[in-house]
Length: 593
Image (cartoon, rainbow, N blue to C red; front, side, top):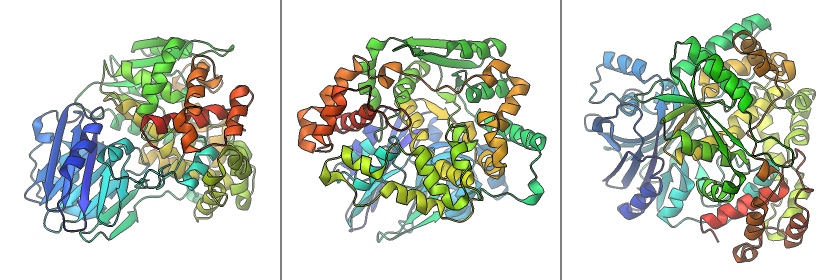
């Protein structure tokens, strides 16, 4: 797990090494254990290292393989690197390290851009062919690892975080109206390739981009489950439970690959509890688990310790529990928002940031349960979507999931910032029109898992943990588990108020109180209810001189929201005021005019 950066010139000039150094240094938190730079002809690469696999200097990056004529920078973990190494050695490759980075380099040397098809893991990388000057960028199947890009006719720059690109300079920071529309429609989510900034894009997940010396490029999407069923798969619940159970065992086992200790973020919900139970099945002893809570606010509890304690006792984990006082939230908000590559509205980002700070003192790698709700249909709005016919899926999705209509988005924004069409609904219609999703629910899950999820919640976990040099791994986003879930009959996923097949597994290995408890979230009551001192920070941001100069939001509407913060909520109950303030605070934190 690391941070990478680079510049590719198309105009015959040398790359700007000072800019690459600034981008690299901006990502120091992502990789506190090492720093490296490399340049040849039209390309420069930078890297920050977090030592997880092969702790020696042999695994330092940028990694140069003079025999193959390849230099690589890599962020992530290839869980099957040992198996791939044995295969590559059988094909005649010699290794100088024990790292997964070198396995990636040798895999590219053997299979070229199609090497990604052999990789099991989370990754973003840049590879340079010395003899051609060709640059190859790649991102993992689910977009767990980020890769941001900015380019003009003269050069391309890329980095693991958007603020790193800003540190390099020369970025168009004007706001993208379509991305703003998506942000306000999907509770802060802006899917690839867009970001809120017009001049910055993201390499889409499951994509390899080959960039030639003259600046031309081509993309290849190398993975997309079909979300259809074959007659031979059947619908026997017992058969599906056993298949998912075994796939989840494999997913968890894979993510224990490390040369440093591995822990688990244990909320006490079904997903994280399953991870702990499966590790116990594998004989994992002295497992470190971590839970966090907040002070109650407006009658809402801020912790779920009774559930996480139950799992920690049953499986004899080394459990760590942290309670956060409300008066810490203003400072925590600032640091969490400053750590965001893009603005996010989910208030549990603050919780993850605070938790990661504590966890990083004990371990460098943690497993967490993110993604299970999207992969196995755990959210309460999925049954409403499933009830629609396949042709009506886009409208059913919009009615159940969107925060607000196109008209309501326009009301919040200054007229100059409003997209000229219903951009968010158009995106959903286009995505769901693609062949391969059998039912309305299949289409909705495909959209969530393969278009939206990478930019919330996956991005949230990556940003908040990497801000403390902590690597988070997500077993529920194992590629084989996702493929299996895509083919699983919808009724098995929707059963028992969602995630039915996971609950069936849980009933065999977890306390019934965990499986049958109401679905919980990572609560931060002071943010949810706009309590003090959070409200003061929100008011200051939205009325600051920078906000007035920016003219992003309609000022009359902002005044109305500030006058009665608790009343104005989205269709799903989130604070409208917090959505606006999160974006404005993020823009101010990164000095974006």
